Length: 236
Image 1 (cartoon, helix red, strand yellow):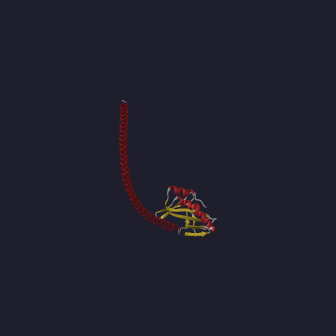
Image 2: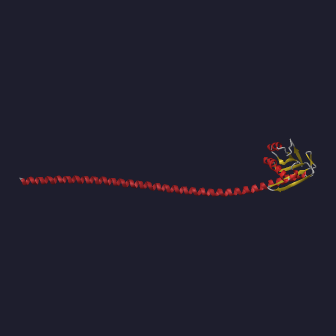
């Protein structure tokens, strides 16, 4: 009986051990399955992320190619505009030169006209004229100037500035530079009555008013003759 009981206990222990082993095996299988599923999900996620990365990279490459193409078009357009600008600048320079030549020619024509009208005159608006000079240049120390036309008598000097189109700065130049320079350069005439004349073919209303304020004679072309305007003439 003792032997049978010991065998029974041994068999029960073996059964319990077998049951534990089976449970452990089931647990291992379940954990292994869960690990395989997690690994599969990880692989799937990695593949998905890799695919998204590849797509993003492809889109980036496509965007870079498109931007490079646009940059090339922009550079081509800039080169074209630069070429057109160079052509325009050249045309402007040519036109400016032509206009400058026209302006210079007009100035020469105006000066020639007024010189021919004044050189033989014996009086100017009641002021006696003994002799006249044209394009008189003089330099004394740091002072240097040229005067278009000068009319003289023993007591008075008339300084004539000639312009085709008279501007405000021409009036200011005659008043503030030409006449003071004349007094310095022609000291023998400095104490005489010095009158300013602005001669031209074109005057704006503002220029006429400024010349009158300065006390200048205004000399205009009138057909083949000249017309003198005077209003409160000032001797400098």
